[in-house]
Amino acid sequence: MSGFIAVDLLYLLLPAAVANMAPVLVRKWNLLNFLDTPLDGGLMVGSKPLLGTHKTLRGLVSGIIAGVCVTGLQSLLSPTRFDLVNYPDVWLILGILLGAGALIGDAIKSFFKRRVGVIEGSPWVPFDQVDFGIGAIIFILPILWLGWPLSVTAIASLALGHILIVRLGHALGWRKEKW
Image (cartoon, rainbow, N blue to C red):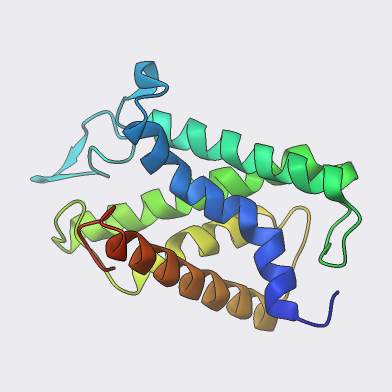
């Protein structure tokens, strides 16, 4: 570890953060349109969608690809002073797990968001800021258990980073919502 544990954790979870952003960019750039199918298949629970139309196969696949690309780059840069894992040995599975964990964490949050009546695309603070981090940490358990204090630190660091990026996007006019 580098001595700056929040930096080490952010480096480890950078693939999850990039995976969380990938669906928005892939949609904006009209990539992988053939995968633009809702993950829930349009299934309704009562009068509410299971997940909603914003959670798509395209988003899940693009998030996993993004996670793998980032861990692949990290494995090429390894060793660095920020390495909490041996990237050359685990980069592929780590990228898949971080990408899938981030997007599935987001989808699970959407399930609950629909249940409490939050409109699709509307902010739901603080859950929008922590969902992908929680999912990523759970999914990497087969490779690495951070322990409770580091897991909480990682989620808090990711949430802060998420807020800063979203605020920057809002200030630049790329996002309507501040959250």
